[in-house]
Amino acid sequence: MPRAHIATKQATYTLDMLHRELAGKVQQNKAEAERLHEAMKHVEAVIKLLNPAHKLNRIAVRRRKPNPYFKRGTVFRAALEVLRRTDGPLTAHDVALAMLDAKGVKNAPAEAVRDLEGAVRASLRGSDAVVGIGKHPTQWRLTNDADKA
Image: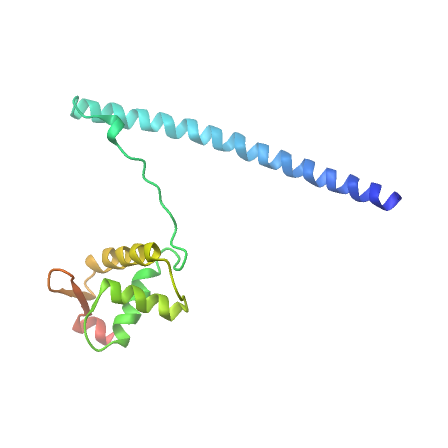
């Protein structure tokens, strides 16, 4: 069984190195957490200077979940592609569904569609390339300048 002994030694060595690496990352993250905590204390102090009655415990933690279907910065371009391929205006929900369909995503969870719809709406809202029609739900179409581009 010398082979098993060597394999065990190699595995132990590899796991030992992995443990060291993880311990180093934990130390780095602890230092970063302390720095962020100090920054939060400074922000809280400024809030209290501006409004002493403000309740800091009511500030919710903001958690960001990355979009599983589209990388950062690609939602707007994908939405424009959908609008270029259609004849009439579409709602943000319709654009999101068309984007998922173009990616080949079938049966996406309702929450993911809702999140993508919000991302589409936010990206289109500040753009000169599209025009919002109506109030609720707003339908989007390309401007004449974007049609030519």
